[in-house]
Image 1 (cartoon, rainbow, N blue to C red):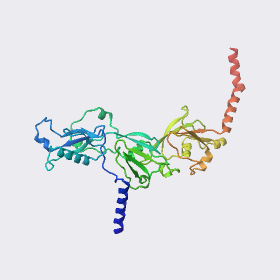
Image 2 (cartoon, rainbow, N blue to C red):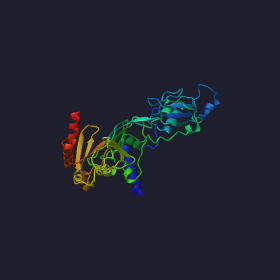
Image 3 (cartoon, rainbow, N blue to C red):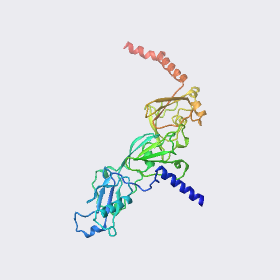
Image 4 (cartoon, rainbow, N blue to C red):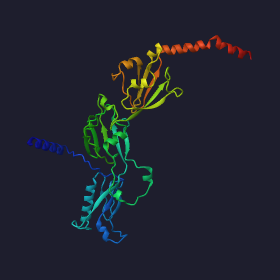
Length: 363
């Protein structure tokens, strides 16, 4: 027991030295959030009195609450309980109420959408919008306060994992154990590996302006190439297959498939009919994987014979996982293509092809 207490004390001392506070599990306020302020002392005032404090308030763009008779009160980045305490202290300091008689409550009635930035090893890094409001809510006016509104609501899309999903999810090279969250001058590091190990995940609530940084590892992690809370569920893949004997997109020239994240190149080759066949030339059919880096624009092409691809299905370099917006092209071997050309040339110079031409010439 003594050793355990010593370990906890050492941990607290280390965190105090680093200036990093414990993560908060209560959702802080952001600009646009709506709260209901209530005090029963307003009941003693006549209806319509300008001295009433109870009502709906919205956090301003500068992060403050504008309450009558008070200077703008900080709210953004603070928990509701802290805002409630600060308002009570300000009302007492201004001499409007005596502390022993003041009863004040602040409740959230609606959580606003917020913008945060996600950078690093995500498929679509950049500025993302969380907790988007439906158009009918966005365009509507304030609704009368009901019991349901007083209780507030739970915004599951204003959390760390939601921001990563909105940025396209983690790449296989993402350092899932060192996710950085920057809020103003503070920075915290979170280990989200519980997503793949089944352990609890520290899903931290976010506020407007937060920055999420996903570091990159030199080696890809296969355990991240599957659907999860932090990775894509499905990915779009461009497919072109005009080879014989099976042409699922005949007449289209290509199609976009939504495949489960974690699909390998060999699986697409089989599904597209690029493998198999009764002719000897089908064994030499090839598959090309076209991949473009969305940040640099660099495009790489991986060319694999189908037979070699199937024989090395468990080799990551020979049979890679597909990524969003990859292109897969199936084409016949050179022998098949040359045979097709010769058949076309033979048809053109065939006597049966020339006879109708002679009759048309006579006409």
